[in-house]
Length: 175
Length: 58
Ligand code: FES
Ligand code: FES
Image 1: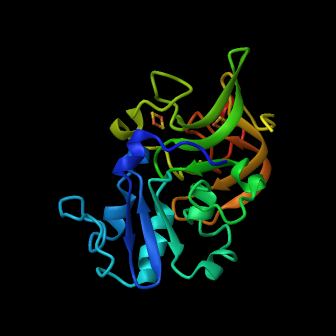
Image 2: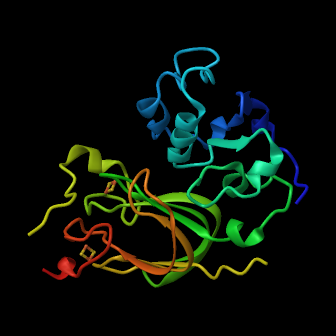
Image 3: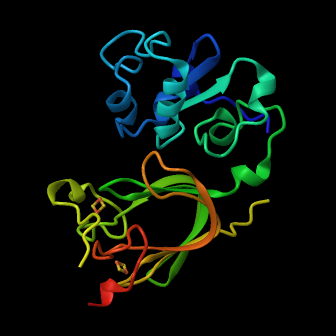
């Protein structure tokens, strides 16, 4: 709690719309591109500012922010009371992803669970703290984001090295 | 407070076992679900992805 602000956080931005505010943390972006593939009207990296809160209805903005695989994009209601009953379906609500910015009543229980995201035709991304057991060794990983290979082709197993892009991902293949 | 109850185990020649307190999103844009234990396919051969169905043995 009450933790120090890192220098990189100076680049963080927020964009206030009518009912919601979107928070942008560039240091957390892993270029999954889901935001602009989904809603270029709002998230346009070649425009300044790159987020235009007027570009689409706010429900669409919420949906899109929820697709961000990291905490690079988060959002919250401008009306504080509404934030308290946002449920887990809204994964990128600020209360789940950036509890340090949502200091109301930090529910540590949620902060401590490991988030596991299976990317379509790509790796599985895990975020949080865990013990990793690999090749008989156990390592403690704290507040980490890492991605494990699902396609079987990575040269740096068990991690994804991007090799899945060069093959036809064996997705949904039934025998 | 610093106890890492969540464990990720890379099973040699097999799946990724994740146990503990997990919130999993099985498909991009899908609904997050809370789970206690999952075995995720690492070989690319499972017919029930993202989970392992034992096909890695074949
Ligand atoms: S999933 Fe990325 S290399 Fe296998
Ligand atoms: S790892 Fe078991 S089916 Fe792929």
